[in-house]
Image 1 (cartoon, rainbow, N blue to C red):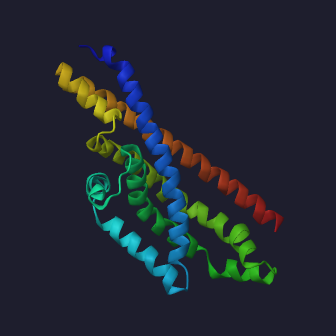
Image 2 (image 1 turned 90 degrees about the vertical axis):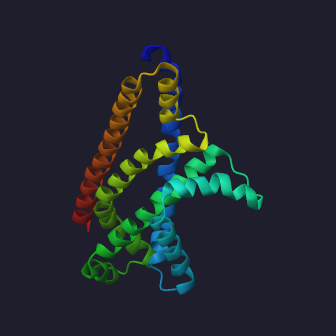
Length: 220
């Protein structure tokens, strides 16, 4: 069997991988923003749950987390679809790291900027949206880009919970044809392209935010 005979299954696996990566990235970003601001809260009942989440998921393997969500939860009467487990499991894992990126980026905005916003009679929401977040976004985009690339490299783990992603299809092709080099050489290139595309997107976002911040600063 030649690799060309397996292009359609590989394409289907690629589509599954892209879906998982995109949905996980969106969910991880939402989790990071919520948990990141929760970690900055002065209220302990808000701050501590976020801290426990970050420390737990950051300190345990995504591999184990996926297996636990898919194979252990049914013992407690909780049954989740494999695709849902893949998306949620990866998002929770990467989101725990991204939470710290958000927290650190917000804290990196100088006190002088905050005081200037107060002097302009900005409300807390206006200070956050017009002054703090635009500067924090520039600080968080480079490390967030690295995490999103890491997310893409984590997606092959979902093949271990019966999801027919790109890696699963490559394993299947290798088993049927015995062509290990062709199978994994092909997906190596695909993952490189996906990761490079993600890096390009974040570089473009960083440039856009820098231009927007410069315009906003001039208007102020």
